[in-house]
Image (cartoon, rainbow, N blue to C red; front, top):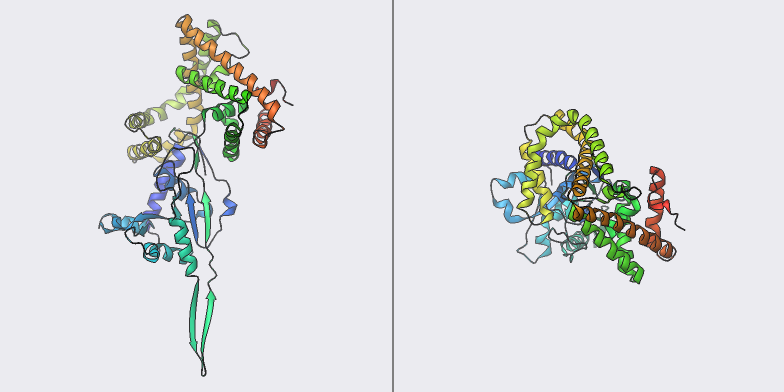
Length: 428
């Protein structure tokens, strides 16, 4: 089934949007995808229309991908050319005959092309896979059943029946798309959701998520989830409760673990908070002239993104809404100007966030005893979490393969970064 110009247009727009919205995209396991031959890709589905866009622009070896759509969409004379040109495969859901149901899919596979499906059937924000539908497996079985066919040839004396197996063997490739923060601008993406306890543990082990290599992110996160799920001792339960309380307090003050870590070894005083705020303000002021042109141009897009979130309760729809609004608004923008902004936005955005965090801390200290107590309690809570985490790490390092894996990765990255805040007290 040939691809038309519609596919190139859509994937180009998707590439601009995806790489502009997410700060980093990492494809892990591309060596497992064959360069040719029929493939059915079975992917997780947690971010609406963003998921197929991500697959289309990141699939290994630049192979083009067909996606399923119900055949009724092809009856519209306006949408049909776009769907056909985009390589979309019609699926007849009204029949129970598998051959008829997947006829177009089988034709695509016979050409040695790629079909991507989402077996969960719907986009969601659960921390687990939903019950998988069997469409992909039926399509694979139907294709396999057609691999053997008979060829008849007549001789003078008898009829010779020859069975021949075609060379193109189908490959079923599972694909997990993981978003660090799927609806957050300039977050990271891997080709999920995590419990509060696991996420806070990861931040304490790695100081901040920037130290976690994306290729290890899923492994680290899943190992922590496994550890907390499979370990029910009193000390681990205590750690879990401390971590959840700590995160709740952070959210209440709109602060991050990194913001509080600054004061772990320093006294929390008004002069120190004021000094920190002025330093961040000075750094931001120096960068502002370089950042301001891009900020002014893109500010309406940021505002549109914020507004779209207020009207969308499902997180799996937020990223696609932001991307669509930004794409529509910036359709006439100059490419070089967009590149200029994207090249500088991460460092400037981090500086801006640190400025806001220092201002919030300063405001809390100025706001009276109650606000000051809340910040001091945060610092204390972080210390309790670290102490309990060190204790659990020492006790369970030799008992839990999951925790040992996380510790080894954390030690490696902390050592490479030259930052060993968690290991001030050396673990055994």
